[in-house]
Image (cartoon, rainbow, N blue to C red; front, side, top):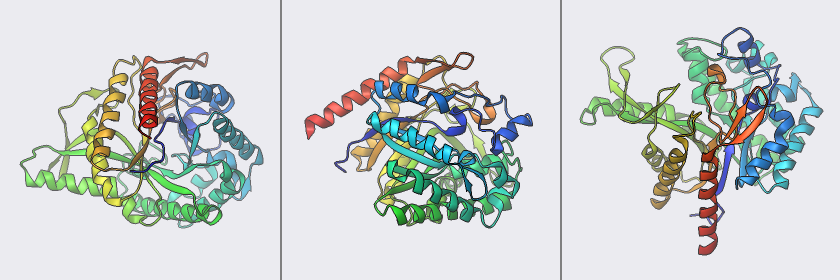
Length: 399
């Protein structure tokens, strides 16, 4: 195990918290009535970030994961907004001044409107265009970034945007587009990795992959087990195989378990229920032991691992305290088995705009009243604070 201190924090993404990101494809998608709510002012985090980070520091966090809004930085192809880059420098400087490590995501689902109009991630030169944006970011703020996350959840992006059709660009069951976009995102990650390492050879660069704990409907069925193995490889692992050799660490986002069974009809599988508590409104089956299993599975890559997202929608905050405790225990179980887990980021620091679901799901350690922008620390945030304190004290006493 590494002697590096384990990092504790929470995560946000630009469009979900900043407000008024009017130049990206999600803003246009919302304007067409494709989401439950308009993102609008969101959490006004673009202006309120110092106060929000003060709360994170107060709660004992030692790191923060955030994303940059590409559409703010590159207003038109090749034209970079120095005001936006200066703003993000100030954001990172504020975190540094509070003693928080900076985990910066370069792409968290949103695209500049001009990029989307050109064909988005389906166009052949998408990775090259992304690399130009990354180069501008590296030059402007690279000295303030501790850890780089190139792309967030490429599997979710393709599933929602090109198969289910519930996110932009709204294509449904377009398998060719799913494959094309997957390969272009993989190329973009590889290009970004090289761009960052050219300027900062010792940089830590990776990506954040959404992982599901797939479970056979009938554990005695060889066909059900085969379906689970295929899902696990394709959904959880494939992107790492497409981008092998360009990861300094692995970022894993884990939320739930899902059942799978063999079907004699195309596509030869079906989703099934699993016997674990479900959360609304997404019907996620909460299964902390699934995180242990996934971490053990990812041990094969022999890379440090960060849990870059883990959380649940719980406005009443009745489930979140034990959710956090149980998933930290799941991480500790994996560590006891030799998995090199280096950090945990709860999703999310703040209640925020949850994409097509709008503002109804409440994921925040900190509640946000969107009418007044008032922040209220939830009890679960103090549970998390106590866990962080105990862990840091334990590590300090053992060194």
